[in-house]
Amino acid sequence: MNAILEGLLPIVKSAGSKMKQFFDSADKDVQFKGEIDLVTQYDVALERELTAAFNKVFPDFRVIGEESSPFDIGMQSGKVIYLDPIDGTTSFVHRFPFTCISAGVYIDEQPHCGVVYNPILNELFCAAKGEGAYMNGERIHVSNTDKAVRSLFATGFPYDKELRRKTVHKFAHMLDITQGMRRAGSAALDLCYVARGTFDVYYESTLRPWDMAAGIVIVEEAGGKVTDLAGKPFRLGLDYLLATNGKVHEEFLRELNSVK
Ligand code: IPD
Ligand code: CA
Ligand code: CA
Image 1 (spheres, rainbow, N blue to C red):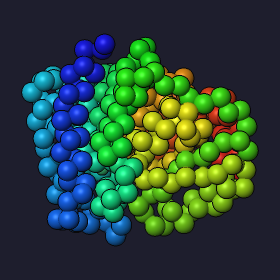
Image 2: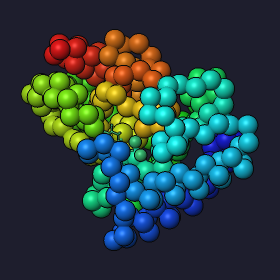
Image 3: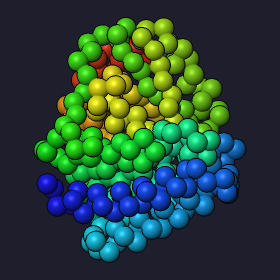
Image 4: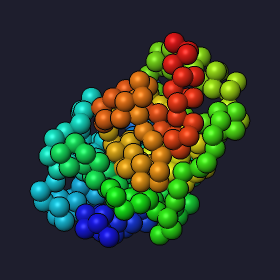
């Protein structure tokens, strides 16, 4: 197994068992980063614990965690671990069990490996470049769906309400042309569900590097495709992310671009 992935896994698993205890606790202290953008004491505590553990095991890596980095940080050079201590905080607060820890490793701006762990449903996803993608130790692959009308489309919405209003007509069109649409509330898990073939396509705008760094490696290693809306290979920091099984990619690029 990839040596960095091997170092990441026990750290994320151990933080995951704490996250599972916090998930059920009634004492969540909810603070507001924006009108509907939440953070709890557990996001902060998990980020602190994970960062300290990563720094110990990987002293030459820089950890970019959501709760301690500038919101508009882009892709960084060198050896980096992008960390979302709780992806899906709104779900976590409401005890909707689609929430996870996400840690993605990039070296010289290239995806290297990643772990996404949902301790509530006990789903652990991981992948390393060139070594395939796995869920709970079993190899996973994207779906074979080849038409939009047979596709389950997943998405998420920005916290900025003005931006939401601007993009909502794209989703009306997606409802029209697909088999169905899901908004489960965690970008990292949405990407993993494309990787395991549950979702055929996932599209979102204005994600931050910690939301997607790990999921991108996992989708690509499961045989999927990740691009921007122009169809160019995706780079952290870009605004529009389209991840599919590859077979429906061109069709969704066309359809998403057809609605301005
Ligand atoms: C959010 C989730 C959500 C996505 C938002 C993200 P957070 O992350 O991934 O699914 O739609 O764009 O910001 O705030 O729960 O870590
Ligand atoms: Ca997130
Ligand atoms: Ca988060």
